[in-house]
Image 1 (cartoon, rainbow, N blue to C red):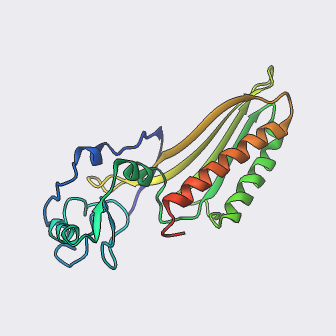
Image 2 (cartoon, one colour):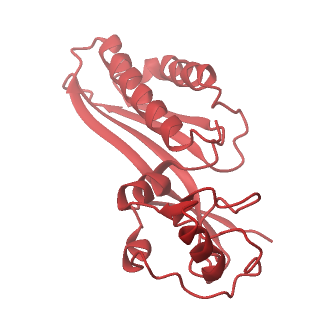
Length: 213
């Protein structure tokens, strides 16, 4: 049975493991899909073959012969560190997202407006789902002070990351944008900031998942 655990720690591009594996290190042929003419190691991009796996997992460094052959044929190439970071942060095979919204403090009355804004933007990009039972999801949090007209805003993507040693799947924050501002008791100022954050997220998300959206 798959277990999903939500971890509220922000993972700063856990590409540390990938960074330790240098380009040129193909690994071995212990993948169950080894020697089938398809490169299932997700460190490579290009024409890896029909049916190649898309999510990082236990095929990394375990499909050496297939990947080396396709490299020699110039059909695939190594991912850059920047591509690996973007893939970890935002790649989901263009999964749809449900919206989790929290607005606290003196501006709490605009929570419904924030939720409507977020859902409508995701719907327009065909990225919205109302299924709140799994991952990934997009969270918007606004906290406004009672005594001063200031607020903080954070937009976070939670996506599942599998621990291949234990088989557990953890929900972690892989993309985050935060900021603070003065809104002078004018809710539209906060809504404008939310709108800009959401637009930035959708642009980056679609770019990272363009082959699947």
